[in-house]
Image (cartoon, rainbow, N blue to C red; front, side, top):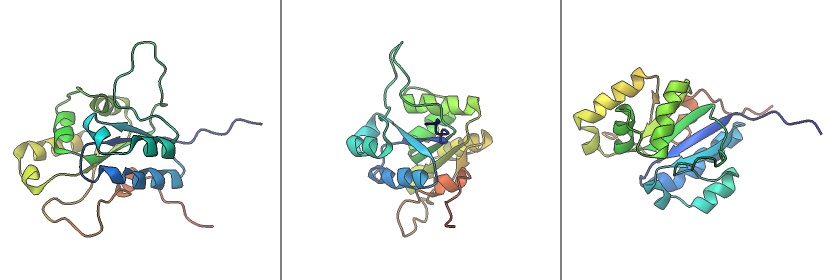
Length: 177
């Protein structure tokens, strides 16, 4: 049996926000668009998601901590990265180049490796009003990060726009034949 071609691989970085339990929506949408998915969660996000359900859906272990030297890499290198939901804390640390969690380390390295990256911020209007947030978005946009997500000043109906991350990355929906 010939080897199957490798499907493109998407890292979904999940942060600790109230919408995080819905990450399965993004995972399923990416899989429907022909992508393999691995999840990288911030340590706090692990308490917001159902790790067993996410791992069953992706077929890969969730990464949330650094590997020890000599341990195999559980995920292939990403072809794209989606940060959803992206919290105030993660966005500001990422823009500042901080790498104190595996998720932030991966985001900082993705820039240096030229991996297309999109972020869907999820924060309150009060957090969005902080001057550091606007500066961080400017830095991230200057790095080529594609920023979308709900407007904290005018939250819309319909919930968190998970699939927008795929649209921002140019991952087209599968069309019927």
